Length: 342
Image 1 (cartoon, rainbow, N blue to C red):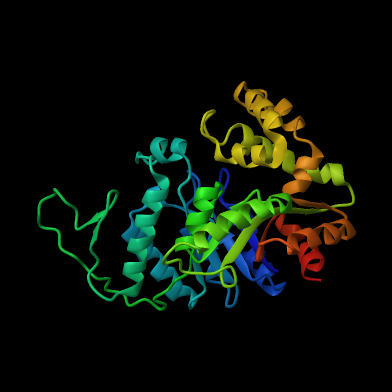
Image 2 (cartoon, rainbow, N blue to C red; image 1 turned 30 degrees about the vertical axis):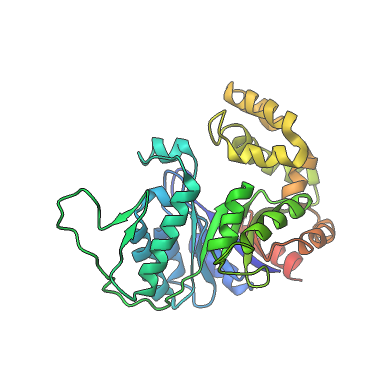
């Protein structure tokens, strides 16, 4: 299993020691380094800035929100990043949720799977650079239909360094996971748990079995974001993660459309997730956080002393996960590398 570091997105401003963090990750043998975006910092700018000081580590977005950019704008950024990094770029994409898509970007949310399928198809055309790009879809048309009539098919002026830049899709539900297996090169998993491995394997198998699927289980990447806290105090480590889980289960999405909450409900925590959401949306974030049991934290995170983490890591190594994308304090990277990479 490979090891990556999920740097994430900024909170209120640029995090301290970011350059030192990516340098440490590369030096310690991490395979990849990932940035994210929500509705503040973007994923590409920090990745380009930080990646410029590296030479080996792969650079990925986990993830770019497809509603933030047209397909061709994302393709331009991906080809630029791939050239600047010497072929180390991985394009991670995701649909986000209706609150961000419609509230922040002012774009329609319905039919996210169909929209993703069209988006990726256009990206592939741009990367291949075989001919001027044309596309007549439900969600995207190139050239635009019904405009001035002056639009013309265009081909990128930039020749791609790689005509097949890897595309990973962020997905949580089974239909989206199956889509990733069908049209992408990898799946960015969030809140993955070893206990859900068979559920996800079935969704992936459905995608691999579709006509025209790009990959098989043998050459498809599954990169799971996993909090890792090395500490002799298990409860103190769990306390560092509880607020994040309470936020995603309770408040990251609308009451009737929270895909993160659904993930934990499928794990068997449906009643608990309802309770956490009710508390969180009522404004009692402290109680919502306190309601998260340590068992739930340990389902999706690796916490505790090194020996405990090494023992539990064996469960993860038996799953479909190929890369562990560590989420944790930058200063603990050496300890994490020692535990995971041995």
